[in-house]
Amino acid sequence: MIQHLSTADYKRMLWKNGAGYTVELARSEGSCLESFDWRISMADVKTSGSFSKFEGMQRYLTVLEGQDILLNIDHQVKHLQYLESIKFSGDSRVSCELPNGKIRDFNLIYDARKFHADYEWMFESAASEITSSADLIFVFNQSLEPLEIKINESIFYLEYQESLIIKDQNYLKNIAFGKQDKKQVCAIRLTKI
View (tube, rainbow, N blue to C red):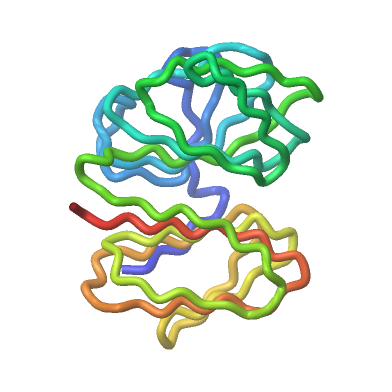
């Protein structure tokens, strides 16, 4: 199954700690923040403060909009700028400071006991492709221009912050990304362990 998600398909929900809002793009299952194997979302971080914990999970975070964020992860400070990413444990104590104002971040949270994750941002302007047999592939377009994606023989066009989910396809998948001057696309591959 290949599903094209527009921004209207995403779900706005309160953070686990109640301090802000998340735009949920996709999740494995469940209707609450205690029952999923993986979740992909965007969060608007408007003030400094603590992050929610997700015990037993792994997290990736990328700055999507805004200038930068200072993350204090278990007493180690990491400075992330626009489109920089970091991986950390959901068990970690995490807080943030916003030296240059609010940001929006992009997040993958997943159970590493159940899935292996490949999390990759692509910025090259030339046409490129990936081949994968992962159980789930999620493609997110951060490019301002529409992005052409060819999956086997099907062609899709993703607008800014739209996504594709490719799942339940038990064969090798070839995903080709068209040429684009300022390509900014994330490909997440989740493979069951």
